[in-house]
Length: 212
Image (tube, rainbow, N blue to C red; front, side):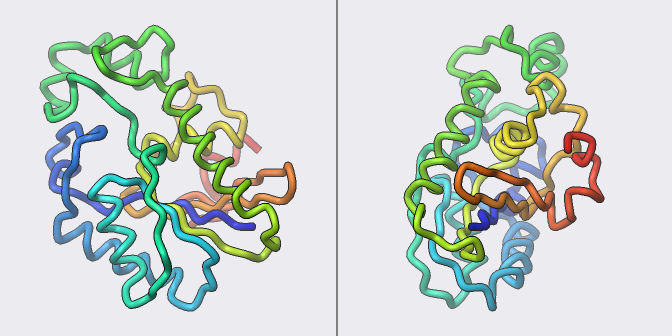
């Protein structure tokens, strides 16, 4: 089966570089249009299941991607963004100025990263992989050409891709970020997992290809 994993559209918090984490924010006009445009990828595609993070911005993105489609959506808390504790709601510019060492540890996925109420990169990766593998297991009778849509968030998506590409978390910061509404594809066949597309581009044509 193919898992089509899509990041949510832009929010006003994204535009302001305000830390969302697991707080709720809404799509801005740009983000709404990004989601509508992304819907073109799926308008003629048979989708056997749709999953979305339970966050408001992913719910909105999922609804706009589906448009007039009537697919049932399953909302999951384990697809939510990395939890950043007391940093949530603050501006990255302020955090970078006050805590440059902690920001660097976070950026590099260091196990030494410690912020009250925040997840480490390894924890969010474990949560994300658990979500993806449970979705695959729920459709173990699916054919190889069946499609599943998953709408989630940038940071957790990067850790998921890193896991299947065997990229160490402390090297993940050197790979391209996923833009809003990025569409990535992971193929699952039995116990095999293969990342084939990053942000609508064949992986061989991206800087992620170095991990192949």
